[in-house]
Length: 458
Image 1 (cartoon, rainbow, N blue to C red):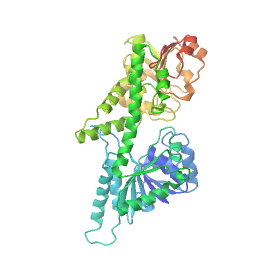
Image 2 (image 1 turned 30 degrees about the horizontal axis):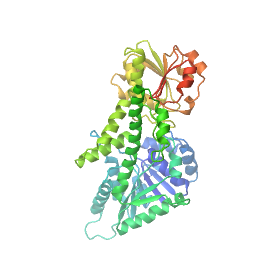
Image 3 (image 1 turned 90 degrees about the vertical axis):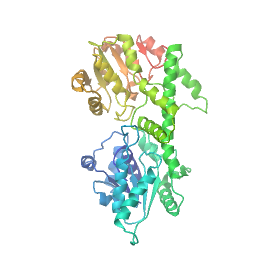
Image 4 (image 1 turned 180 degrees about the vertical axis):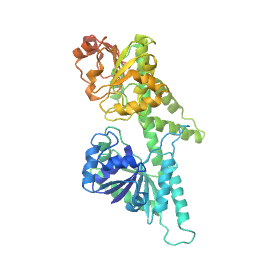
């Protein structure tokens, strides 16, 4: 099948590479000439385990192409995926300018029946707006009564990819959501999408077919539910600190209930990344447009905002508000392991607050250092002065010499089993602030380390 992917960001690259890997001919379009040049040199602009290898072998096989040529991209595929960004607008709503620009390009160049699949995370009703924009372009090209006007069907096909495991998630999906219209064009589009995803349904049927608006809503509802579980556990963890309970034992106790399960019940420093913060805000904004208030999600967002300051508050409680002359080792910068994504990463709040209190920070992250510097420079008006006290190192142990404490912000595997004797020998004080609850309090006590975790009984 000939497929066009519009957008070579996180979703577009993974979708295009994985669809090419099962034999499709995939044309990836992006308006960013520098990014396309990078991809054509064999460089991958994002860090995602396994993605580079999938791209390389499919480029070599001739099944995967990268270009800025809009007309060629529309001509290539009767199936066009829109996988562009939908950044939050100033009011928290999803900005659809890139989605609608892609729709306009499709309408300007399409010559035959085209299935347009919204892969971007978009608010309810977006497919109708995409269709309307395409029809406007067709009206311009084909005056009333003109022959040869092509037809279009817009499908909602939301992605459910976890950063750090996206290739696995795409190739072994737990569900494939397809939102289609009930008319004859919608049924034609459904047949195309079923053919596309047939290789992923060989073991058992994973496709969930529904109307377009329900499919669009499903994506937001899924992320909102996961964000809710995280904020719920974080709020309980903060209470556990007060009452002397251990949130990890609580997690095991409630997670063993099959109605609850263990996923997304880990306490920490709050959620971040490109999805949860943006999608929760967008869903709240959508509700406001319909004069509804999503009280639970409002609380979820409020809890998450506060949770990002919990670890720095623990530091202040131990060392005071004036941190001049103090040095902190920081392990982890990305919002989660196996990605270099710094969007809404809790580490950004921790670094900003400690630097402003006069501290020096020596940080390590396996892949996110460059992105972290860019993100931190955007966070602070006085960044150039403050970042003089922020240093990146190449190995975790290089962050420790002379540190008054070690702070864990991201749960990379490389941090799970350090040599604690070497850690203590390098540091000025044996103090650890663990924002991801990586270690057992009893073990840390035995090691002679002052351990400050999130909701753990220490």
